[in-house]
Amino acid sequence: MVGLSRAMILFIVSSGMSLVLGVLRVPNIAHGSLYMIGAFSAFSISTLLGGGNAGFWLALFLAPLVVALVSFIVERALFCHLYEREHLMLLLFTFALMLILGDLVKLFWGADYRSIMAPPLLQGSIRILGSPFPKYNIFLLIIGPLVAVGLWLFTNKTKIGKISRAAAVDMEMVGAIGINVSWVFAFTFVLGCFLAGLGGALVSPTISITLGMDHDIIMEAFLIVAIGGLGNMWGALVGSLIFGLTQSLGVLFWPQFAIVFPYAAVVIALTWRPRGILKSVW
Amino acid sequence: MNALNLKRLGPGAAILVAAAVVPSIVPRFYTYILAVILITALLAMSLNMVVGHGGLYQFHHGVFYGVGAYTVALMLTKTPLPWWVGFVAGPFTAALMGFLIGLFCVRLNRLYFGMIQISLGSLIWALTFRWYGLTGGDDGIHGIPVPDVLSGVTRSYYVILIVFSVCLFFLYRIYRSPFGTTLRAIRDNPERCAAIGINVRRHQLFAIVIATFFAGVAGVLFVVVEQSVFPDLMFWVLSLEIMIMCLLGGWFTFSGPILGAALMVSLRTFAGVYTEYWTLILGVILILLIFFLPEGIMGYLSTKRKQKNGRRTVE
Image (cartoon, rainbow over all chains, first blue to last red):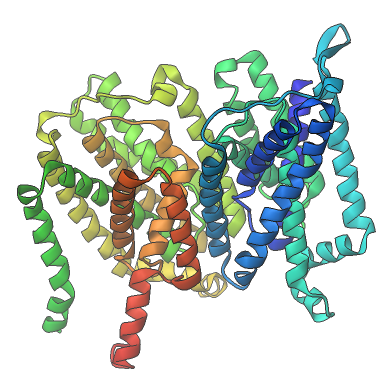
């Protein structure tokens, strides 16, 4: 069960990455940094508002918006000038972004460990099948599928979602029928980063917020997207479940090598289906 | 012809002579930095062979560096074998690892290639990071008993300089060989190369094996200088940093990565004295490079030279 709620966080973060990867064709290495910024802003906002219910919910709402704003500025100021370039350059650009954002977080928030409490409403635990289970994890289990459904509705039922899916398949054609591809890219990028921020805000009550959390999450998200199928949202869900569950199984059976289990699962999955378990959008 | 050769070899020879006399002039610390530069340069050149000349997305080159270093470290600390066995085994183990990982990777193209390499590399990193019994886990292994012939800053510097020069010679021969030319042709147009009967996958795999071998050599030299190993050698951030060095020096040039490595290592050393925000500086440099100098310093210079000489120096 802990694995499941961990998988939900991973899903929210990696679905954002998958979205960006699917449309822009760039693995956004700075995604983890945006996730970290999400967590740190959630901390600042909820401390500013004095904790409690209101503080937490507002933080959950505002922190992803802060992240989206940061990503919007970066995209319009710098990133959008590079779309014509080689993939490797785009990738290295996002790496540069990761380096810069990581240090900016250190400048703003310092290198201390931070933590915030879950709101009073979600504190404590309830018993399921005789074993105690934190309420907050249940909340994560509810919000994960909600995000999945929301994303699905968005990409399949709204016009801009359909445009972004079309841009993922054939960017030139979308441009040819008179849609401003650059803005579609900007929108997708910001939405993907919003999801990273949301993941960061959601995870903040369960872990200690610290520098370096970007490094941990980014590799996981990267691999989840790879095993799920690049750009496939459901693939991100499947990948997150595999990753989260193998991780908690590892902790259960062989704690020393718990970290190895998900990586081994990834290797097996990729050996079996090198292009991801589900179909990639490319 | 002779004059041209002399002109081309002249600066290289001058640098080599300069590098040979440096330890007797400058303080020990700078000798140490120079040694680190040489190691990093070798690593960057080996990466450039696959990324710059081979056009492969070798995202996790640092793993092979780490494998080379760890092989030596383990052989020296855990086995009674004579020391040179470890030093020979390091590069070969790295090359073997490169072959195994390469087998998986070359089946795929571009981004998938990079993805599977990152996942396999991370698996090795995770194993190293956690296997306290064998690798010392996140502490690494310290105080590796490097034989007397190689210890001491000045002596290890000369050893590294010699090994580096030999590797440089071989890398240059490979670069100039039919194999190197074929590799660059595959980078520029894989379909056409396949059509004229070149086994693209085999060439790419071979390139990876060679490159990982030299990364292993760099790893061995790292142990000679630092006498310790730690899992950060295999972390993906290092792999991307080497990539930046190649970018800074110039992807498509032979000697670019040396320059890139020299600049990066010295920048990191001297910026580290003044500020703790080194990665911020690195990020800004990288963005400036991507926007204004995507061919790197050497690439930019060689384009300039070609423009100046017009069509005279068509190679």
